[in-house]
Each structure stands twice: as structure tokens, then as C-alpha cells.
Image 1: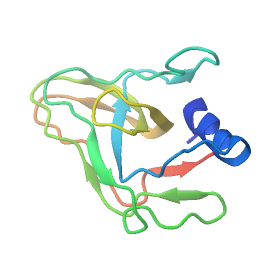
Image 2: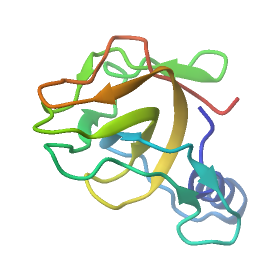
Image 3: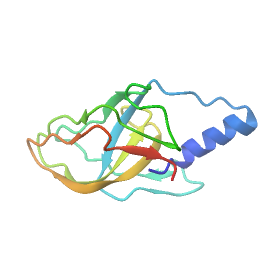
Image 4: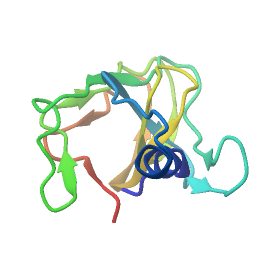
Length: 138
């Protein structure tokens, strides 16, 4: 899962410009129906297409060492199962996941491809098992 230019710029500012870049108390899992991309110089830096309607909402996860173990060799993963609300209608085929810093809008932190795309129809509950979402900058 690559981190976005938003995170890269924040960390560079923190390390080399003494500019504040705060830790998050909560991160929000989202899914995308398209392949995310980034464009330097654009605002926002990313293209990430979330489903709209039919019960879709990002899922809040506490950003702590219990829900995300301390990184080893530059990566961590989810230590808790994460489930989206039950779909009340079709939401399309999702192919990527991403972490945001807000429940709506906000900044994309990073994203990664799902091992298997998922077609979400009415009644589905998209769930990610423990360890299924790996975060690294590789």
C-alpha cells in the first residue's frame, strides 16, 4: 500500500521544515471501484472512487497499537476485523481499499489492491479479516 503525496509532504515538512503533522486518533477505511492514482500538483492529489448510496459509508478504526501493531520492517496490518455496513442495494465492484483521515471528504492516507475484487449487492457485508489489510510504503 503506497502512502499518498499528502502523507509524504506532511512527513517531509515535519522532518525538514519543523511543520506540524499530527498523529490521527481515528482512521477511516474506504473502498474504491476504480484504480486509485495520484497526480503531483493537483488538489486533491488522488483519484479514489467510492461507492455512492445504498448504505455505503467509511468505517472508523481507532489508530492505536491494539488495532494496528507497531510496525516491523516498515509495515503493519489491521489487528481487528473491519466490516462495512450492510449494503441496501448494489454498490458496484470494489477493487481497492484506502485509509482516510475523515469519515467524509478528508485526505487519502494510502491505498492498496484487494486480493480479490468484490461485487457488492444488496444484503452483502464487506468484511476484512485480521491481517488482511497491509500498510507499508513499498
